[in-house]
Picture 1 (cartoon, rainbow, N blue to C red):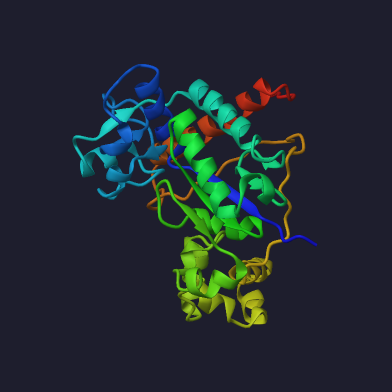
Picture 2 (cartoon, helix red, strand yellow):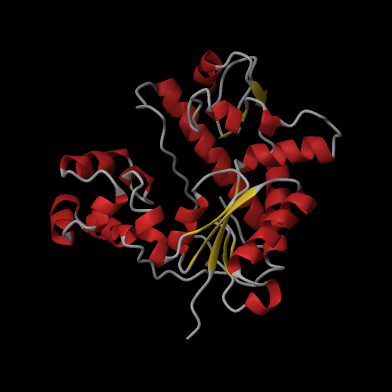
Length: 294
């Protein structure tokens, strides 16, 4: 049986990248938002809204996705704020997925996983295929991506989160001990701040520490979630790439804020941001001809 080859293709700061590419290639602007401190958020004049996406230079000021715009402006008064354009994002996402399907028919749209198993004779080695994909996306669509390569969805996603932007990384099972286990446990998929605190109370600070912990201890302290993240720390994930997602019975989204939400105004901003993203997904499904109702 042929070993699986899975790509996770992540548009670097997607909303900001798509806005920057549109402004340069369609509107003819010369300023590239990706190269200066900039964000996608609400109205700068009113200082309302929440950060939906940020550039790498903005990240150096300590600006986080999900934080209120007024806090980001306090960190960087010269921050360039561009409004979201959801119709543009739907169209960019459509072209993005269409290109991925030129490499493989098995594409899971929302997370952009691509099953490249059996394509080596067409595109070469997995790394070579990923470089071709990354370059084509830049040449034809104008934005950068990270491509993570592995034998399952989890490890491919972890690889895609390594150094950014515009990189290709592998994380096969034999590479986990060197590349993944030294990372902070918070970097593992599905480990949030609350779980991190509980793990640290057990003396678990790295993904490797978690992988080597007795799973019965984790189950006792964290329940079923403890078992799940133990399997993830050991690179175990059997989910297949789903090229045609089942019809959604509901739409959801979540985020981890950079600080505790303790005021109504902050909560309203976070919820509004999540609603905007969910609405974009619903509009995208509607454009694809799938039934969407509210």
